[in-house]
Length: 102
Image (cartoon, rainbow, N blue to C red; front, side, top):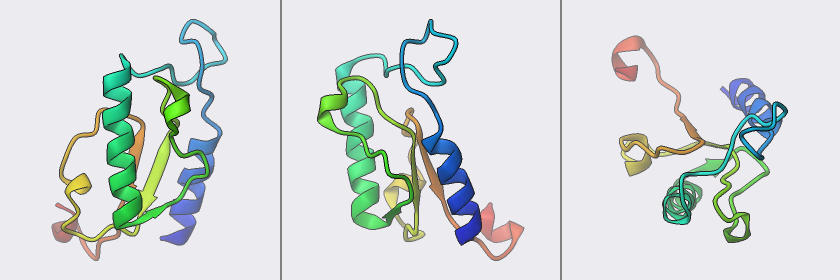
């Protein structure tokens, strides 16, 4: 699993944040500051309950921009695994078989 987390994290780190009208931009800002703050709260929750696998953590100074964040090492009962974040956050969790994944 470590290799998958590493590769996905590298891809996430390569995502360019910026003006959505700029063809070099991959991700624009969240719809408003309140939504960006809500996504940052989920990221803080993930950091407290698992491991962050990317370097670019969202900061308050990012305003409405939230960099893609990859989280892993979360406990199976972590709330973040069951909620929709509506932001650039990916939670990676290992499983033993298809039944456990579902």
